Structure formats: structure tokens, C-alpha cells
Image (cartoon, rainbow, N blue to C red):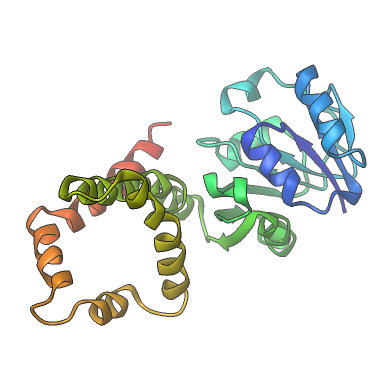
Length: 246
């Protein structure tokens, strides 16, 4: 499978780092970045303009506002777009391909730990999931509406979890724990909970930690009183509604 990656910024660069680069070419028009990629990946062919798409699986990883000014020739074997707010219909109008896929990775792609929402033409599903699994876990969704809903839990949630992490650290600092010590807990805390959630329902995990009348129950009561659960539900709703206006 020949892959043409168009755009190698933060997200495109993360995808490139995760791919088997044996048959990968990259389009990067910014000379300093192109030079950096050549040094990092000497096996990769670097183009400064977009070549004909024939024979390539194209991964489109540019800024959405750049797409209208871009010119494409030829017909790709498949197009995988990670452009936020850019529908499959828009992609079909702009770029010729035999299959169309929309994907939404999150920032953890920088560590090959992303969860990526994927939808599009089912006949290219397996290949798309294989490619996007190079940066973490790829989850197939049945429609663009589902992908828009998943924007919150997949794409935006890292920012919300970062808020939770910062608030936990601030709470510890408020009680007298040094900030650097408070922050030291966070990476393994989230990694450990993630490992547990891979095997256990969230409600069951919560119940295992929260013993009757204990410290966890006391803190949990305060979170419920503050409307924390509803705040996250409303954040998901607001995120979805925003996708409909992009």
C-alpha cells in the first residue's frame, strides 16, 4: 500500500511517526519542516507540491481552511481526512478517490496513544482502521452524526481531563502538598485508571473504590453536589452542537 501524507504538522507528523514508512511519501511545502523530515526519516520521499494521486492512499492532514485553495489531480485509491468540520460530501466534491474516510484522532497521537473516531466507506474500513491504529486505538462509527457526537469524548475530552488533573493538583496544593509532588501523581493516576477501565465498567470501578462512609464517598458527595456529572454531560452536548455550526 502506497501512502501519501499531505501535511506533516503536529497531527500529520504524529501519524508519520507511527506508520510503517517503507512506502510513504509526504507533501510538505514549508522548507524548514521538509528538511527536518528528511533528516528524521531518510527513507521517506518528500514533495513540495502535491503529485498526482493515482495509486496512493492519501492521508489529508492540513488545516481545514487550506483545503479550498488546494489543487488535486488523479484519483486516489482512498482518501483519509482528519480535517475537522469537513464532511464526506465536501471531500467528494474536491478530491477524486475510490473510497472516502473521515477520521478524528486526538492529541495523544503525539505519543501514539490516540483514540481515533473513524467513519466513511465500509469497503475501506479494515484498511483505514489498520492505518489509523498506528497512532493508538481506532474506533469505527456508522455515520458522520456518530463521529460528530464522538468529537467530545474522543477529540475534546483530553482538554477536559487536563482540567480535572489541574483541579486535583490545585486541591492538594490548597491543603499543603507541594505542587511538584501533586503533579507527580497525575500521569500514572490517569494511566492506571485507563488500564482498569479497559477491563471494568466505570460504575463498578467507582463502587470498588468508594467504601461506605469513607474518604472517597465524602469527596464524591461534594462532586455530586457541585453538579460535576451534569457539567460533563452538558459539555458533551455543547461540543456536539458546535460541530453542527462548523
